[in-house]
Amino acid sequence: MGSGVGIRQVGYFDCAGGGQVVVQDNIAYVAHMKSPHGTSIIDVSDPKSPRELATLGMPQGAHSHKVRVGNGLMVVNHEINHADTRPLPADFRGGIGIYDVSKPGSPHLLRRWETAGSGVHRFDFDGRYVYMSPTLEGYVGNIAMIMDLKDPAHPAEVARWWMPGQWIEGGEKPTWAKTAHRCHHPLRLGNRLYTSYWFGGFVILDIDDLAKPKLVSGLDWSPPFACPTHTALPIPFDIRGRRYLLVADEDVQRPVDAMPAFVWIVDITDEGRPVPVGSFQVDGIEDKPQQPLMTGCHQPCEKVTGTEIPCAWFSHGLRIIDISNPHAIREVAHFMPDLPPGSDRVQSNDVTVDARGLIYLIDRLRGLTILERV
Image (cartoon, rainbow, N blue to C red; front, side, top):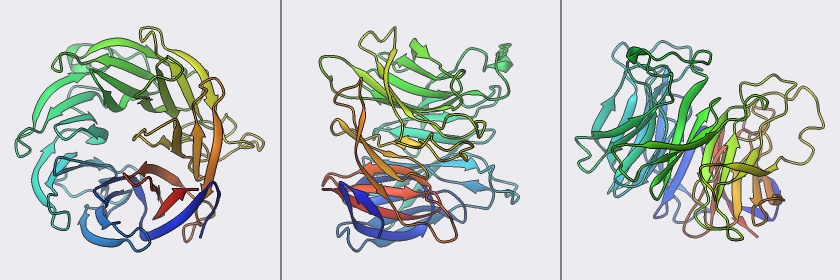
């Protein structure tokens, strides 16, 4: 059993390391980091004794490390895994897989949508539309795309948006190196897409006309800060009469002597002028110089149920932060899972909550831990 403050462990499911976990109707869907593992579907009706219902695989050299579920459908990404040096099958193409999971124990493939380049990295799904980050022919780096799954066997592109400079086939020229400015993933709230853009910061897109996304504003803080922007999470309620965005940088691609990644809270009451007003870092994480990568922040829970936000903090496990005072974010609970076999530190990668208030923490190396707040 791991250890924590304000959190206790309810259950554990031993599985290959995961990139994302979502839970719907007491079924957990785990997207794995590395082939041959693709997606696991797990019954968590009894969280003390999770049981596997079905698994999907992936070919070597590729992965399917993200998953979303809604309206009886499961969507997974298909992407080249650049950390896997094994050769890809000659016929592999990245994209998304769309499955019927009306019977979760018998997932049925409806369609694979394929694209050029690496494929799709991360995405959101509301049961009808997929908001994703594909690589496409003629563009440098991932862009933002909206896909309609009204007929899931025949997905239809609705719109795309890219940062000026990405459309090289159209004569644009990037002002950044390689793919430094690329879409990580959009998150929809109402008629806005809050879209992280890696070393391009984040952008807010107006999708009142879904087919014609328009830039509202953006903010980029790298440099001076060293880490890329991973997630731009809109808070779906006002706090003290104002609107906020929780923004997580990812603790990768930085000099080892640079500050590890942390979260920001940004005031978007005037969405044309986003203003950072607070930040949070795990206490003591900066006391040691030369911190290895994947020490700091990775990902907040994208299902926001209140001002307490669970966050997967790589080697520092699960941290729950309270944003009720955006100018003074504070940690209110934390949990450190057991070390994955063969590793000298945890690698907490993603976290979600279910309708019962249980917390699901996936390690990118091994294991799904089920927790509850106490």
